[in-house]
Image 1: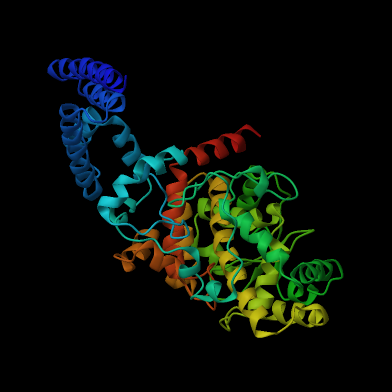
Image 2: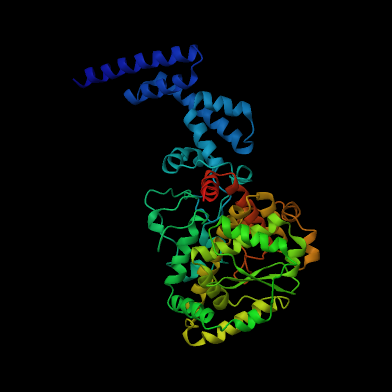
Length: 464
């Protein structure tokens, strides 16, 4: 009976393989591949079908390797789509994964990577626009989060990596979709970077952080920061572009317009002193250098964290990490001193293990929060190139330097740096003003601007 069963399967496989040969002869290569593989599924020992399918697989791999080095090779795309359309679809999705060193990736040789591409494609649906630079660097190993940032500290403290979502790939995390389980206290705004909220939750879960955040927000209400506000000048009618930019950004993001103040400091970083009400201090150089679209982006990115409920927690990062601040940012220094003094009795312990944990998670979360803020700014101004130029100018030490700085010039300075290198700034470096991290932010914002996620978000903004 066993011989009869084997014979029946062989006959069925032979019949299917004949259909494969007919399809191949008529130029229907994709069908030929499927028929040959179906013949093998019916009878795995059918040598003739195995040879044919093996040859097709080898050819498919060769075309995938070609596209690995040159994603624009049209002949390779056409050939791969003809003989192995599923592989072509997987390669296309692989190219579309964003330039993110935070995304976990298996370490694998080239030959092994293409073996597992089917698994990656099945577990992850990405329908975004092609991400910049990925096709040039896809053969490199993206470092896991705990090796990228911050300077090995995450590995030292242990037990703090975000939980992986069920069904996610070991090779890549889906980048742009937020699951309901990730959202605490209401729906996250459409501009938030996926891991932003995961790390925010970890930051707030550290003992003493939530208490510090509450004390900071109490300090706003009890006018602890009033001396900082008093050191600024209210914006008057002499700055119509700034007033218009603030109104536009607030309208687009459905926020209350901020109270605007000017500071004579010689740098390019606005400072949100508090929310409820929102008080924004803007260096005069920002008004002198930035275009109306760039101003709208800058105000929008200041409003984004407030709307997400992040301002107090981000200010807690500033207080607890105590990063060095250039003396030209005296307003920020004065604010930190006042807040530190007002919250001294409830600050988390200074025990070394806790300090390492604070620095690791606080820095990792702020990096992601900066990406979210950039997206909010882009939604406010709807001009990607202006947004990217504003990011670049924000890293300048003075208005004069900012006037000569553009996204293109800043990126040229870091040409050849991988995205992992750009993101791996030390914990003592503020990701909001780091030139290196700004290049990474620009890449990420350009990628998001070409994505379905951005299109959905901007449609929602415009419909309001």
